[in-house]
Image (spheres, helix red, strand yellow):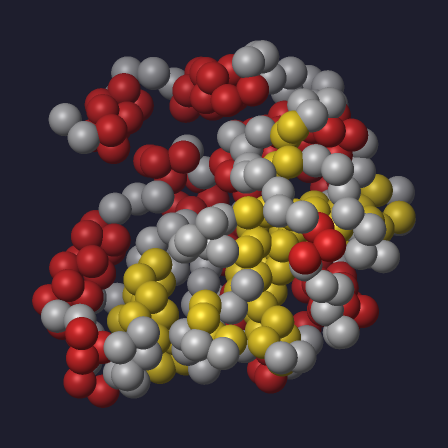
Length: 292
């Protein structure tokens, strides 16, 4: 049996809440405290257990485009080439020479095609067929993905001088009317993947989250950092926490996605106490949305 098949088998007998407890214990070495929710990981895990309904539509890689269009304008969106709900509807011949193929209802279901003449169309169709049959919530238990209609989108491949563009994932927190942003920069995603964190003033944050860091002095502050932060702030308005993923291509800011449960609450902090520090940056969903 594959790992996915094993997990599906286990889910037939083990309650979802118990599985979330167990995954948290395996990832962080402690049982989660869903009553107090003092850490970032506990708050995200609780969100996985009891998601707000709005998380589904705004995680949908097709539907969220309308949200972005209304909030900040269509100029921040990628060019959309096609969207299909059946693999048989894919028109490979009419797609451009390069494109990104993504499933609307999952995370990581992506194929980046730099030259379609080097790609067999059956490879695209087979990938789409596989994704369309799967329920992402069965992988990481993130139930809000169940609210997303399964579709495949074909959109612009974002490159910079022949290389895949680096992305800026901006963590947006809100507590008591005070907002905070942390910029997470990914470099070398397909070669030597590193993740660095910076505050709003581009001062490095001394923490590893998910991946090890590179020398922060080698990562230059974007000339349009203020605009990146403004766009992220506008898209995150009304939420206690969301990660806004953006691309910056020679000053052109392009929206990637909204992420409400990053890493399915499994990503570790080093040093571990930063998990508690980030937990102070926003109220739990139970508190925040009860006040609204």
